[in-house]
Length: 403
Image (tube, rainbow, N blue to C red; front, top):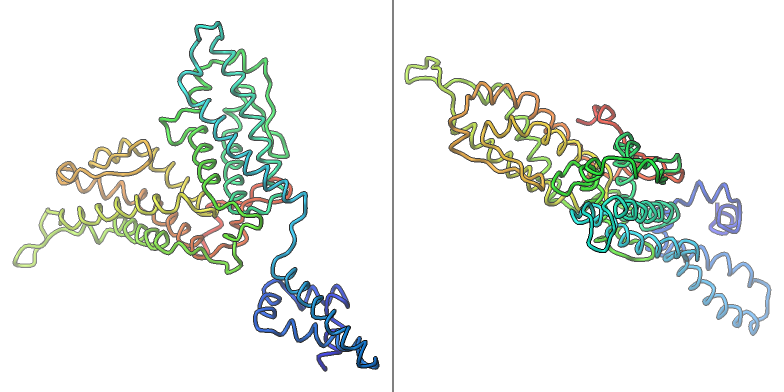
């Protein structure tokens, strides 16, 4: 088939279905880059000039070059509609407003009566109204926005809200089917304010307020461009250091869960003793703590909801095992980072360390492998946000095929 016949039959000037099948976004970009696209366009417009006189043909060629440049420009940088531009602007400003609303609900002063006569209950209701209004504005704007590095955080924020649906309902905040919130003011006024304060506590990294504050913070820190060029089509996340620390944490978790690490030391005659190789176990634990913190330091700023959801799983499991970890000299701070007291660890019963890490270490290892996976491959399942305001974040059981 000649270039001419191919173009007439399958280009954007021909069959729509043929164009959809033959020209994906990726192939179009390659065609533009290597010059094939321009050749095809020249071939098409050249056919319109055949049979015309030299004067009119020359004039058409000048016009054709302008058309070619315009089409190529539009293909490289697609025009963003007015509606989308407005959604992008509303999302950016909405995130800043939501950040302020969350901060107010996390402040201790919101839950105290003031000298001018405002009661704590009135202040909480006012703060909650502001929060819900700003939350809904962000969710609505995200549905039409092209700022995918921000909408990924919105998706994770919405997923967290869904997780706390029961607790929110108890204080009069209802989650609607479209992902927005609705306030039952009467119920909130009757609610125990300590429940509201606990739900938004800044001191508990697992609280609803802390989770939302974290997502809003990172969404506000992402690059603010019209087309969000941080969301490229390579299908990979460029944060290799994060991937490396996640992979290293996976290895450390598996080592701490393995019986081999706790093999008893043999004496000079080769006979097994009752002693553990504490130095070796300690070294592995130190590496585990170091890679755990490094992974969170780097990965928390990711825009990939697959990464973020799996980090939350690890953070929650760690928070639920704070007491057990402390017994071995491993402390968890307010930010969720770990620290190791070597003296306490050395004095711990290594058989208990083994029993604990058999489950905890295995869980962290398998979940870290998913963080590593999503840092290397932005699978469609990790895009997080769908047009109907649902959450496209897979459950832990969905990852068995690649762990």
